[in-house]
Length: 369
Ligand SMILES: Cc1cc2nc3c(=O)[nH]c(=O)nc-3n(C[C@H](O)[C@H](O)[C@H](O)COP(=O)(O)OP(=O)(O)OC[C@H]3O[C@@H](n4cnc5c(N)ncnc54)[C@H](O)[C@@H]3O)c2cc1C
Image (cartoon, rainbow, N blue to C red; front, side, top):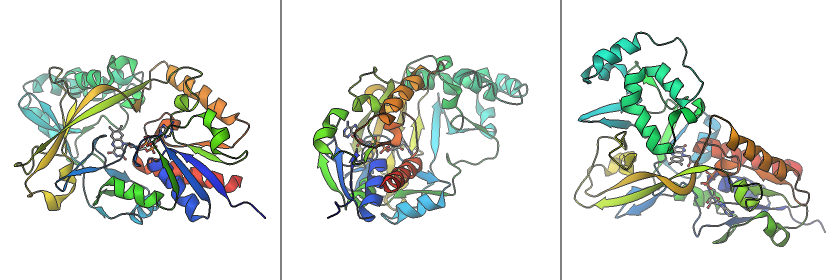
């Protein structure tokens, strides 16, 4: 008798849950192994007295891809939300991305204006710092970007690749105030855990134990496909050395008598004297709660050991190490191994890309079968 299709997924974040969801619905018996004691990975909403907060950082779903938007809406209900960020500069609260129309209020406006009038036609992509300085001039860069970047990355901005700034640092003159321009944007009304749990529901789930390559002989049959969404240095027990990551730590505070604490969901704090990089108030995503008393404010501190942001150094060292791990993965003889998601690909990806990678991983498993 023919054995039923089966496969293993390592990691129950959005990528792993998407792959597991598609494969299970295609008739595969899917076993998911997650090291944490809950599913959801980096996108897990928590609630205090009906007020949402995200202990792993603010998450707004935004995409240009109608197929992905339709896919996630099949699993949970999204409410419309257009994300706004503000940056604090002394007594000023400026829109982020910066808007030219707001800059004349700055005491430094005469220098800023002079610098803006002599910018090069295209930004200089040598590194993060050259990119930003050529985009907005030295003064504005020094006031709003340099120190925030130092805090967030813990290294000089000229040691970072320009790719960190492209599409993230902008100077706008069109008055468009939302952070994202994607046509599809929203926030899941019951939080992200609801989405991930709905996706992963038909799979068999094992929680609380990390999986490495050494475990595959026990956990899988020879030839059984494995979707890996964990970091490859973890998966190979650091055999080629550790990959470098930058992590954040969030401290949450529930304020029972406050309805809304700040003027937008995210407030950036570029001042080096402030130890956190930004404050986040997730409640902004659910308009129906705005007048309800009680809110949760999270302060995001940089420099935690968590694997949140891969470090794109301008020398390319970290990418090269990742490529060596990918070669090792491709050469693994016993099982077809498919890497997907932010950890396994050592890349910063948004949630829509995580879903896209989960779908692609499932397709590869189905095709291999
Ligand atoms: C601070 C921050 C804010 C963000 N904000 C946004 C946003 O606003 N909008 C947006 O679209 N995207 C945002 N993102 C990106 C988003 O978080 C990712 O796209 C998404 O979480 C990727 O999902 P994933 O499944 O690939 O990774 P993860 O969510 O990290 O899931 C990987 C899972 O694998 C598990 N795991 C790891 N190692 C092992 C192992 N050895 N064995 C078993 N299990 C293991 C982990 O515990 C985890 O559950 C943000 C990211 C950060 C860091």
